[in-house]
Amino acid sequence: MGHKVNPISFRIPLSPNTLWKSRWFTTKPARYISYLKADVNLRKMLMSRLVKAGVTRIEIERSLKSVRIIIFVTRPGMVIGRGGSGLEELKKEIVKNLGYKENDKKSPKIDMQIEEIKEPDANAYFVATKIAEQLVKRMPARRVVKKAMERSMQSGAKGIKVLLSGRVNGAEIARREPYQYAGGSVPLQTLRAIIDYAAVPALTRSGYVGIKVWIYKGELN
Image (cartoon, rainbow, N blue to C red):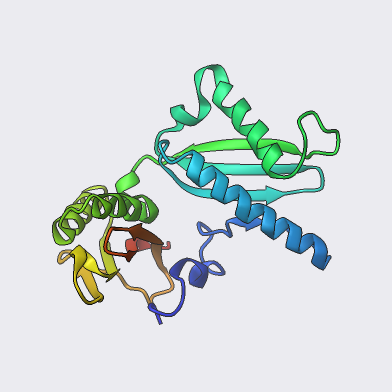
């Protein structure tokens, strides 16, 4: 079952620490479609703009007249800027991305919250993106993955599993290469287990290489 169901969505009903990335509700189909499309476009814009800040996750909460955006990054100073100038510029881009003009009275109030990730090597998305960056630079896949797993275990993870799929290292035939740290475990079928999961593509010269990372962080109390 761990190969068929996203581990994060699988545990949302049971884990208080795991929440939906978009949190809002509407009974109108047209409004639902517009909100969903706006969330997807907003995430794409922020993820591409804040790459250097080490963004890993973006959560969006909506109310009647406001939009709350929670951004999880490894380097919050690059987002905030001097005296909060970076946040102000980011708010203007967000308003524009939502389809409103600057100083438009109809535009919702943008409330931004920047959260720092203290142990980035224990974050699945951060680990997957770092592996992807090194694979694009044509570094040996086995060495890259093993070093990434060692750093994760040193950061407090209790187990890590990595799966590479595609023309790994420029191979003629696409294949799947699974890796798991020998000293840890990743219990995907245990609902009490806290699993961080991410899937990231690496666009190498040989083609598309998919990277999946599972990190086990312990069990719920």
